[in-house]
Length: 147
Image (cartoon, rainbow, N blue to C red; front, side):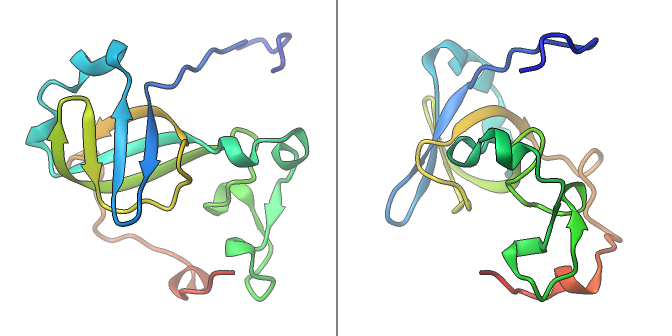
């Protein structure tokens, strides 16, 4: 962490953890934050922010350009134009369907995240703040290539 940065240092603490089981993904919210879940069950979708802890290294934080999806057939792009986990701050974001709440456990649709991934924040997905209509994406992003 750059403690000399004029805007920092920052402290980010996880509010929960992603649990991946065979056919289900659960977000376990830590007891200290359970009261923050009140009313979340009224929403069908969540915006989930998490820390890519499994790939967080100094060298990966310095990577500024990648081939999207790790596929060299895709054009080289800046990491801010991709969903690559290699980035200056390895924060992942998903919009996922909330299937069920059971206390401080949120059953959500499958996420592309490792078991044990720290959850930084959970927000409700709303039409007004999270519009999906008229989204423009480049041709390479329309192709389902993954490596």
